Picture 1 (cartoon, rainbow, N blue to C red):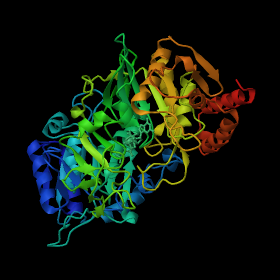
Picture 2 (picture 1 turned 90 degrees about the vertical axis):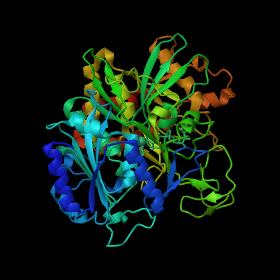
Picture 3 (picture 1 turned 180 degrees about the vertical axis):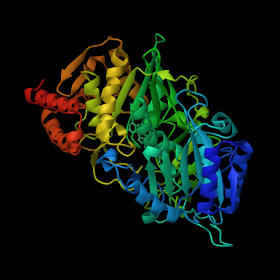
Picture 4 (picture 1 turned 90 degrees about the horizontal axis):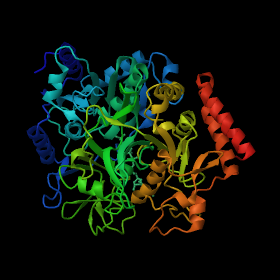
Length: 597
Ligand code: GTP
Ligand code: SPV
Ligand code: MN
């Protein structure tokens, strides 16, 4: 039991407010996990999957209204509205607390309050942080067991006076006397959902949703929205990035961190199996990177998580065999199809399901009109089960980052790969990144949106100041600054076919990137950056026509002038707060496009 006063006071204050039936302090043990899973199976909320097919795995069906992050209900409550900036929803912190306190009052009646001590990052790493999540959802507890390091060791490391980030969560569905959920996923209606951040206090309050980033508060809320604020104040970086180790045939290692928006390929790239000879890839993280400048001046990254919360649909032995292996045991699935023999299935799994039950609990066959799995159906799986997890993935000092890669989902205009002219130009590329909408957020509509550094929904302060932070980090890193590239795996032909095979074949692009770093290959200067000479891309064994390749590496000046107008409009929302360097980069790109160089 902890002697930490701040923690004890906070738990007792929340207990008084939320009025749960009981309180349970999580120890992170296997017994605790097994007991909660059994309780949820017994109550009908979870289904135990076929032990012979998927050992120690369960499936959950969420409420159909609670299937993804809700950006319209996500708030940054800083004292001053400008600190949140034009891309975040802002409410005055006092007003928001007042509203939420009335929602929290008695919200845990009939339920258990779980206290989850967790560490983001290996316990004891100089880059790690401790959080405590209070939740009334056992689903959240078991997911946190996988996604973070939970339990007594964290309490020990916190000690009597250690500090932590308080994360309060409730599904927002109190139970009357004698009432039970009856196997139904508890949550509150949309207008009562709040995913709130108080950055000046390092405080998170989430109410009404039990799904993913809304409820597993270590992930997007702590590791990105709150951590981005801390990183800005303390001079480090908290980014929506996978971390990957590449080893070339000579044995030289490169560490790459890549930011793509939600559902745009991070998990896939993180577990990539190269299709080119002699290259090896190992996974360090698939969603979040925390990075600090080490005493030797290099930039060091850790993955603050210990599990993967990955998109299920589209995951197959062909696209991501390492993820398929990772989820064979000890995993949680949410909103998939359950087959008649109690296994899970989803669209794009690379095998057939003739008959099963869809994510809404209805009979499903291939003839059914609707998809069987929700497009944002997910698996939760321990990172250590990934066959290509890097042996150094939990190194407390992290790995040295050599390359940053930005990208998004663009069916036209943006070429397969572009190298930035400089750090500052790379920051401009990251800041002006754009992507097509996906199912990872419930309320993102429309076609293409600017998603700077894939952080639009996750940067917990004014995005203009975040741009400046990137420029500042580059200046501090100097010659140690990673090289910056921009990729797009998602170009389509006019008929709507992928022009680039993607997945394992993305290793060909990574090879070019590494060879650029080593100075082994030349590049072609274009108005938007440096592009490969087609002869320098390793396409051996690929069936790709030279017309397709030309299309993939084309810079269409007119289309880019259209892009420029959109970028200008996007940047204008930051008005006088926009860094002057960003304006300079924009002007330089405009003049290169005008001069066609
Ligand atoms: P979040 O967990 O939401 O942050 O997503 P993510 O960035 O990790 O995306 P993920 O790797 O799960 O990929 C999302 C979707 O993109 C899946 O349906 C993949 O099959 C698809 N995808 C990933 N990589 C590629 C690629 O190289 N080419 C194509 N065509 N599709 C890809
Ligand atoms: C994302 O949307 O980027 C995710 C899933 O990684 S969630 O945890 O729901 O944010
Ligand atoms: Mn993500």
